Length: 501
Image 1 (cartoon, helix red, strand yellow):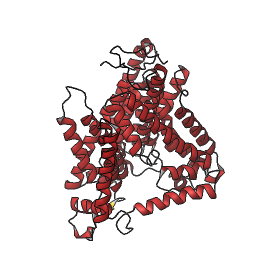
Image 2 (image 1 turned 60 degrees about the horizontal axis):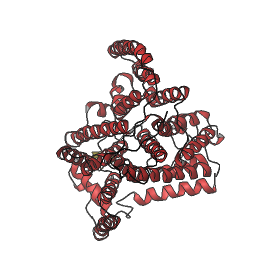
Image 3 (image 1 turned 90 degrees about the vertical axis):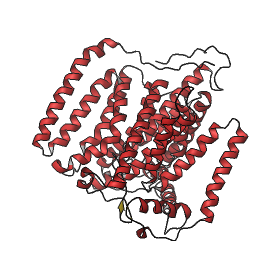
Image 4 (image 1 turned 90 degrees about the horizontal axis):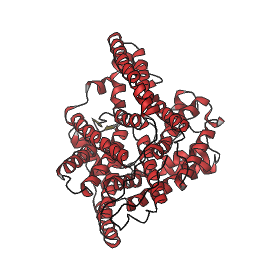
């Protein structure tokens, strides 16, 4: 059976791109030479120089080739953490790191280019309307005096609102091919990160990591691996997403595709992620395995049976198991990280072994406090580090829904919950209509990453999640226009799909 190819190409002229190419290449050469000189000299301007050159190199082609700019950004973001650590020996710590503005610079450039060319797609689905209203509330909350500083609100734009805007970028430029490209990039980077993370576990942190003084996340006497990322939490979230993509590719690969490479890659990412010592990674991967296996079933009864069986086995093991050993009794390194996992998974509700009850209570208190004490919200940047940096108010719940109610008030919190619901529902409908690993992975990621769609500090995660949600919503809109939401046509001939400018 032949399925229709749903493409979404922007009707841009190629001549301007050809004219801009020499300028772009010239900037790359000049920028490389300038960075080389700055590296030789050293000093605090090195970080600024690299940030400015990177912004220019990505922003210039973004006007004519937004897909290329966004793709390059997703390649770069996972390595942002180690790049920042590399500068510490020559520049020292930065109060305001200009490298963190890279995502905002590229996103704003792409949005402006799409708006000027009348290609920015805001309408057509319930999800897009909800996300648009969420952004509007977020922009209003930037000026909320409860933050005690406007700079805190502006920080909220960079950390919270810019990542959400990737939803509309994806709706406007993403198609089946580009979404597949992003999936491949994340899968490859996930494997590389897992290999580097395993190196950190078994052979110690690298020179740049030690120079950075990274000791924020420790288990017993062992520092958690962080791979290329800013912290162990971001590494765990990225490894989860990469695993879901690889596992979906393994189970839903097309005919003729080899099974060995996704099997090995998924195994490496799973093992590397497990040795982060993050219980959240293990739980989310477990849920993702259940979801993907259920989707692989041929009928709903079998799917329900898989969910019930695997969930029951996990709950039963947790209810009948316990660990009385201490982490400090284990050898430093992998043994302590494994023991940390086992203790929490065997006794998830024991406060002395697991942080799950603490995180749950903090999230619930944040939501309830936002509803009862500050229903109008405290401001967009309250749940970011902007409060500590700029002398304003900083408060958080370690859970994005709680942070949304706290920062954006009841209207913003309700809109955020609605965005989660409609985003997952839209991804589910695309998954049913478009067989294959790509949309299975997007749906499973959306479903199992709830609670981490907007976590400050995870600079490579939040834009990626919102981009995947936007890609699914854009596909949903085109499927709806083509009358294909009930599944692919039973006819062997492709059905016509309306073009989307």
